[in-house]
Structures are given as C-alpha cells and as structure tokens.
Amino acid sequence: MSDRHPAFMPLILVGGLIFGFGLAYSQMARPEVVLNFLQFEDFGLVFVMFGGAAVTGVTFFVAPRLLGRAPLTGDSFERRLKSFDRNVLIGGAIFGVGWGLSGICPGAAYASLGIGNITILWALAGMFLGAYAQGFWRSRSQARDAAATGAD
Amino acid sequence: MVIDPLPLQVAAELFPNGISRYAIGGLLVGLGVTVIYLGTGISAGASTFLESTLSYVSDQSRFQQYVSSRDWRLVFTLGIVLGAAVYAVVYQGGAWTTDVQPWRLLVGGIFVGIGTRVGKGCTSGHGVCGVGSASKTSIVGVLAFLTVAIVTAQVVAALGVSP
Image (tube, rainbow over all chains, first blue to last red; front, side, top):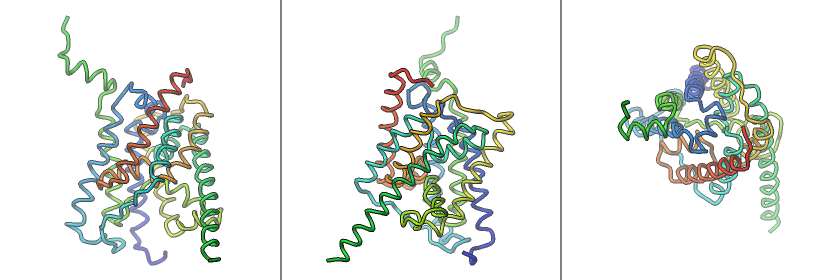
C-alpha cells in the first residue's frame, strides 16, 4: 500500500467530495424525496441516475482512447464487468425491498449524514447489520464448500 | 386566465420541483466518479464500503477480500459525507433531519445491506457506473431493484404508513 502515488488518496477524497455534494444537491440524500419518486409523485429523480450515467458513459468511452493508462495507478482502463448470475436478481430484489421501505441507499445514506440527518444512523446501522449477516453466512457456506471439495 | 399549453401542464405534474436540481446533482455524481476513474482506473461504488469496513473488525473471508481497498473506500465515504456537509452549509443553512420513521430506516437498511452485497452493487455501482459502461448485468440489476422498490414503496404507502 505504501507504493501508492502520493496523489492517490487526495484524488479519492476530491472525487468523494464532488460525489457527496452532488448527492446532496440532487436531494437524493433525503429519504422523502426518494419515496416521492417511488410513489410516482415526482419523477425528477430519474435525472440523477441518467445524469450520472451520461457523464460516466462518456468517461468510460473516452478515457481508454485518450489516456491508455490511469496516471496514478498505471492500471489500464479496460472494462471490468460484473458477471451475471441469479444473485444479481435475488440481491437486486432484496435491495429493492429495503430501498422502497426506507427511501435510502448506501451512497445517499453517507451524504444524508453529511447534511446533518443524524436519524439516518438507523439506516446505516441496518446496512452494516445486513452486510455483516450476508458476509457471515456466505463466508460459512464458502468454507463448507471448500471443505467438501477438499475431502473428495 | 391563461392556461399553460398541455406539454407544460404535463411537465409540471410529472416534475413538480423541476428537473434542474436533479440533473445538476446527477451530473456532479458522475463527475465525482469520473475524477476517480481518470486518475486511478477505479470505478467506485458506494456499497462495497460496508463490507470493506467490516474487514477491520471481522476476519470472515467475505470481508477480508476487500482488505486492500478498505482504506481508500473509507476516504471515499468520508469525502461523500464532507461534500454533502458543504452543501448543507452553503445551500441548506444548517442540519436537516428526516421524518421517515426509524423502524423503516433500520429494517430497510438491513435489506439494503444484504441486497446490495448479494446483488453485486447498488444505485451508484450498478446505476451510475454500471449503466454508464453499458453493462448488461448492471442494467438488469437496476431494473430488478427499481421495480421491486416501486412496488414496495407503493404497498407501504397504501397500507397507510407515513412518513
């Protein structure tokens, strides 16, 4: 980790600052606004995702052609696509239940804390609990699978 | 009395708060991802932070796989909190707190914590980064969580739970 470029962490911080400011500016850090969107009372929120995806779409298209490699890590800009399997649908559905019930998603929850919404700590506590539960369970089943294969 | 032309009426109904704050906010979210990606080649999502941070306190293998990225993910999240705080100071004039009931936030949060990690991404990872790179996995993921979230929110509202 010590061989990282000295500008690596500052750049991550600046990116996070812009990201968080944008989430707050978009009002997505307020669960009420998300719930209004999901209840079809204000469709404006689609522009947050489309706006964000439009910018990243241009970035992901242009960066590999102009830069070749990332200056701070030397990594290539190749697309690291997530593989599709059943979990994408199952996890997506579980996430959807949580998002629809609470009106908050992880990035917006961090931003919500930033706008002074201490009540959102309930949601953050829940997210850590949920992430821990699935990690605990999946670590177990992974170890069990490995042990079963090893015994063959 | 002057009646607005139909398209304006429809727009006012669909977007009672206009679209500029949403669009500008979204563009900034994309810009934040862009800054990090151009410098490092990393397309950063928000929900991996949950598991990478748990690696500090748990030695479960699911969390330990994120040890190498846990420090910058912590810095990224700190940046998100601070960036939103800057907005609150400049535009909001102080703290804002939600009226959504704590049990909804806690129970919803648990589902979000499980679902985003099992489903390989959240609104930023799948929604902004994945859709931006035209990943079929992410587009399907977004359709899945968006559809279920709409149904859930509508059912909860219909049951009279508010806020």
